[in-house]
Image (cartoon, rainbow, N blue to C red):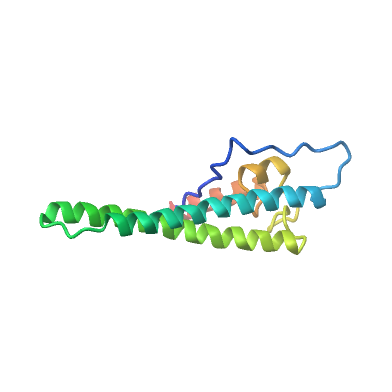
Length: 145
């Protein structure tokens, strides 16, 4: 089962890209639009990491009651797992920014067609067009049986 990917929480400040008629796909304006989305998302994830570290330092206590201690350990374990997934997402964001720098962003890794502005806004780290992603998910379901 694929890991659930977080999405940017700054939807209140998010402004969708408005394509102009005849505009070239993945021009400099579009690349900068996606770079900003990715950088904002990364900054939010980094803030979460800082909050978690502070929270764990502040809340760490040696409870005499084993049940209280177990509850706190389970809470910390869940937070650390979440941060680990976000750490992996930060790496994916960094590699996506590299794709933008190398002019390889926005094209399907499998078939090479445009992924599309709307799909990339919904999932900025997407590397497959919707058709290839659908086929990929069908194959995955068949293999799992």
